[in-house]
Image (cartoon, rainbow, N blue to C red; front, side, top):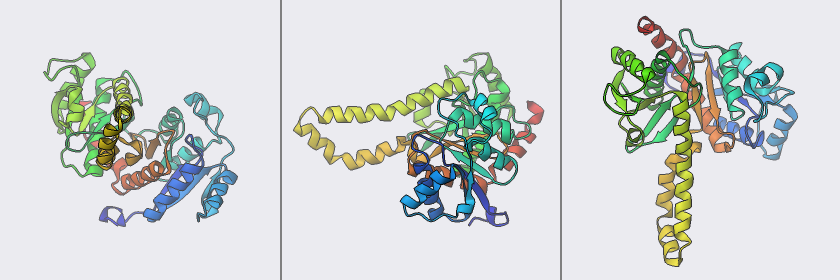
Length: 344
């Protein structure tokens, strides 16, 4: 175990067993797989206890039933987020967030309703002091590694100060999780020139320029996959479109390979010859490899997964939550935001 975590209490990670299209099976199996990989944390499940125990029994898994917290309600994917957390107070998402709020857990992981998870994390856990808006980030492969993008949908119509906060929090995340000292930050705009952009990005540019961040200036869309920067900052409206476009890249690539192979035996043989290589390359676009996305700026660790998350994705979400705890991300974000309060 790293020196960072050696003097702290054992991390407690609560997993929403009812979250996702294949709940509770994938959530339970994936979380227990994470515990088998790294048992240096305490795992808690929230959800319908009988359903959770059934998955454990059917898959010959071992888990302490005392760490299963029964909840009687489930926030469905189609529920309105803010309404759901008000009316379904005994749901797995609300109870999970409350456990972190009450310091009975350190991290919350869910592949359930994304909006409800963000709302519960923000309204129940609360924001880190000084943070105007939390931000949700995602990962995209680039020519040299991984690009992180903040924000990709936590909120829209961001103010310049919010974009600045995304840059601060994103930089800390990349430094601590990917071990990149002084990560490069770029502001997504319609041109690289300092004068390009709308009123919000122009004002955010000036804030970022005055900071101690490694701000390289404006970047364009093509720079995201090129790897010109480690952290891309943008409004959630733009970021979410970018995220959904990126998700479509893997689908179209797979379709093109299948279509090429279907055009004849010779084409099929050529595809088969490079199948292993293609699989390794396309793995970089697979969300399961990264698990879920972090919601930064809330007063606790919150990891949000894709609704169709596999056990592998859930496992990686839990392990990412553990890593964020070990690296003390919440405390480091709080201290950094406090240091920049004078220019906001």
